[in-house]
Image (cartoon, rainbow, N blue to C red; front, side):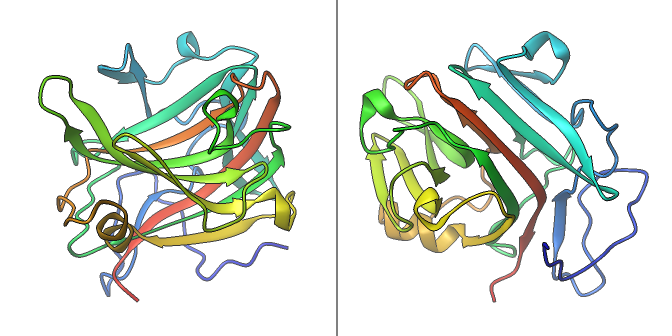
Length: 237
């Protein structure tokens, strides 16, 4: 059974809120969405440039996010079959993400892998699939061609926890692994400021550009299925 450290009454609005002690800023717990629907406060990146509200137009049977419910708790499930799909929140304070890492450097979430792409490896480009991933995009980097400078936290099909892989301005960090089993909920906490300093050798901007949920199985042609819940940011512990 999944442990929960805090149970909150769900407000009608999804705007990220601070508790009285400014300890936890909830981003999304998916309770406000319809079972079987889409998490409509999230966005979809079109042509790698334009963020638009997520809608069925950008979902398909082989690549989709769906809100699910178990025992009264709602969460979002990603499913891919030889495809890739994502959801994005721009850190603009206008929707449900208003994140300053100087006060809240810790990102936490719960996730559960149900199926992971067989044979996938983040360290081999032609097999680089991730059944579940969480991206923090910090800034755009580069002189002539701008690319996201980001950390991607993954649930790996094969690599051990702690593995770090570099792809240009992207750092991939394995935080959960099928080597340790899957099918149960796991709680993840990462100090993204400390991770950024360790991985890039510099201080990150105080306000990341966006947060992204990800699933893909397009390189291996396999199937990935995973659940996300209780996304929040916290002060240093």
